[in-house]
Image (tube, rainbow, N blue to C red; front, side, top):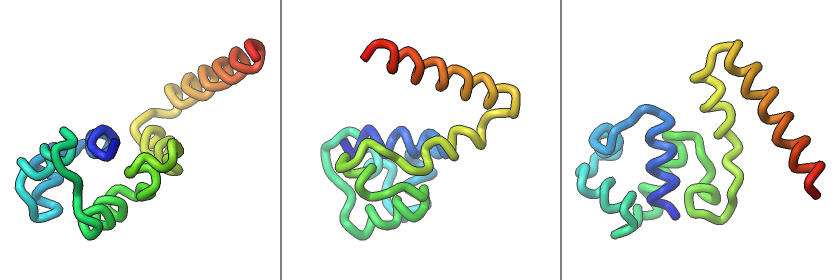
Length: 101
């Protein structure tokens, strides 16, 4: 769980495994090992990652499926026109889900 979420968050920020490794003063192999689920970051590293990427530890650990800043990160990458399209699509999906329940 940590590995997949770490990879997604790292990618959202445009960081490579090497760039994250440099920021944390670990090897690229260490980050790769975390992402592949071969090992897990220490509590100290987990805190650093959460602070660096402004993500909750509950989300990163898989205790919660909600990442409070996910949409903020995504929206920062989109221009205003695409944000409008995204919101319309979101409304459409919510409406479809309501109709199917």
